[in-house]
Image (tube, rainbow, N blue to C red):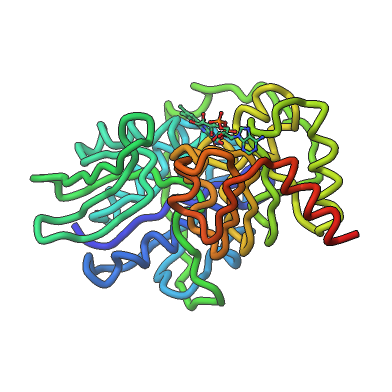
Length: 321
Ligand SMILES: Cc1cc2nc3c(=O)[nH]c(=O)nc-3n(C[C@H](O)[C@H](O)[C@H](O)COP(=O)(O)OP(=O)(O)OC[C@H]3O[C@@H](n4cnc5c(N)ncnc54)[C@H](O)[C@@H]3O)c2cc1C
């Protein structure tokens, strides 16, 4: 067993960002694990994704023709099984998405592999592969070893690894695949659109984010106007989104979006729970405003103002006129 098998994901002709992230994850351990890095893409026209997946460090792109226009868990599992049997990878990386989690565990059972879900760290220790994931509601990081396992399957949390930039020189080959008795187990019923939003906090460079400290829904427009004046994207904590004060796409954190491109993050009235920090603690410059000087947000803040968010907003509005 050697090398890494990455499972690319796509929906309605669009490659998931997580596919490139998985290549980044593979690069974190490629040198120590040894063997080639292969990317498997299955679907009715898999070739259309080959170019985007041909990143530096990828040795081979396996195209699996399935004639499925939409995701099918049984077909995906069969395609990855076929690739795993043909190439015997030591590590299989799948996105921790609704699609990925619907077949990854079953695949691991079939392979008899080690398995961990929602992984955000991968390393090679003296004892072998080591994966890091959250535990106790993401309050602690848990490191997992896989003793006695020659192959390990992991689902990897989105935006946890940086995709290698540029173009690679991977071979593109076809993976022979028999789907007898597999097709038709699932039926695609249709897509339900998420509420439309013109904001994407994962791509914003400057985020002004509000939490429960803004007290009331009626105060939200004031902070939205302030964000607009500053040229910032308006983010929020989960209670703000859960209460319907702002639509879900504004939410930063574990069950929201990771502020992957952000360089300046202003957190107003946000306590800084680990789940919120998951989406922003990596940001280069974090300014926190919270009346509670012991709030956990100050553990990750570059600058802190232990003051009322409304007094802070007054001062900022006066400065920018
Ligand atoms: C599985 C799971 C997933 C989760 N995912 C997410 C996620 O993706 N994103 C997320 O944000 N949370 C998430 N949470 C919730 C998270 O645990 C916290 O409950 C949440 O982040 C708290 O939001 P908050 O900071 O706005 O509210 P609070 O924790 O209530 O904090 C409000 C803060 O405002 C301060 N404050 C109050 N009034 C003022 C004022 N006038 N001026 C200045 N400061 C003031 C208070 O001191 C307090 O620190 C998740 C939880 C679970 C269990």
